Length: 500
Image 1 (cartoon, rainbow, N blue to C red):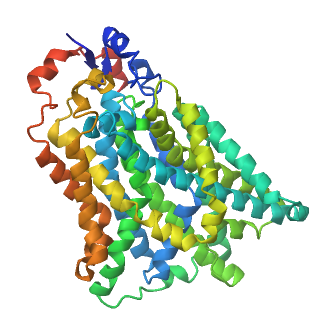
Image 2: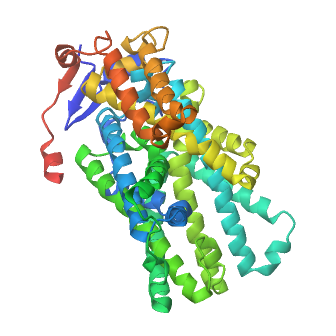
């Protein structure tokens, strides 16, 4: 029986197959495969998604930490560019599955962890994302609060003014997320050009008033290659970790892509270039502030506070827009989907977004940020050691083990081939444990510190090869003949071919 239809490289369920599993406990309207008509995201949509998410306060200030460690400006920008090119590889590899089969991340995870085991990678990604959601909401809150106080001095005398901003900004984030990824598509189309043009105007202002300033002419503090590499590798891992979260749940967005070509080209250019250019703008503007104000101002919020009230007001809107774009796109979709996947018949994506918002508040981000160093470098700073192995397993399963072939319908059948043993694929669990354990040795054995400094990279490759070895003869793998038996391949749409 032909249960799935493939056309133009996109696989969808046949109407009969969709009806058969629509009553399954693993199915709901948000987790089901997208239809051909729902593949509406063009390359422009993916470009604006990434540009909108990259143009944020952490990206602006990313290079500052590297310069404080002794790098010069081009070493810092080079590290940022390389790190984003590296993390782009798993992003594109996992994007392929989302585009071809139209499935979100938690359903993709059923393929390699089982229908119940999928909660392990889904919730691992969700916990990190919810933590960052609370933190970014608080960062956006404090930025807006500072700018309003600078523009309207009476504002800071209002009792509970910060709490008011937090409540309103939290509600705005959750409200946009409640409407789902399609709302993020619209938000990115608006935010990307507005924030991007504003950043360029800021750099023109800095150059006009102060030239390039002293930071861009400051040499590196490293006298030997060895000294540089000791800082370079852990810093590179930190850059990779910045988007390691999206490398996992990128199928949540790519399931709407019109074609593989459009999403791949758009993401390949927009992510590394935007992060590098925006970081350079941060360095250039900060370098100019040394001349203009007599001190280096890395925080764009503190810089905007020195402008006239009207500019501060515009800056407040722009920073709020930038914070909203990255928070909704990067930090709400994944946990909302993971929560939804816990009970698909009762929990919708919107309810998952609300629960994520509540969980983020319960984590008390204002308290977390009061102890910023311990939190960021102690817990969130180590999540790459967990997410790298999960990335490796996802890539190995789809590209090495299954060769991009799966029985789409059986991802929604509790007794299907991807149920494995009582809903858990033990090989996925074993590969995850191995991929996490080896880098952790770097924390315990001083001579192996390089394993921990490169935790994401080592974890990814170790778990990838471990999983591929453990799964080489697994019964869930479709043979070419079995895939052909369930897949009806339709001739390419001539109008679609012309549109490309």
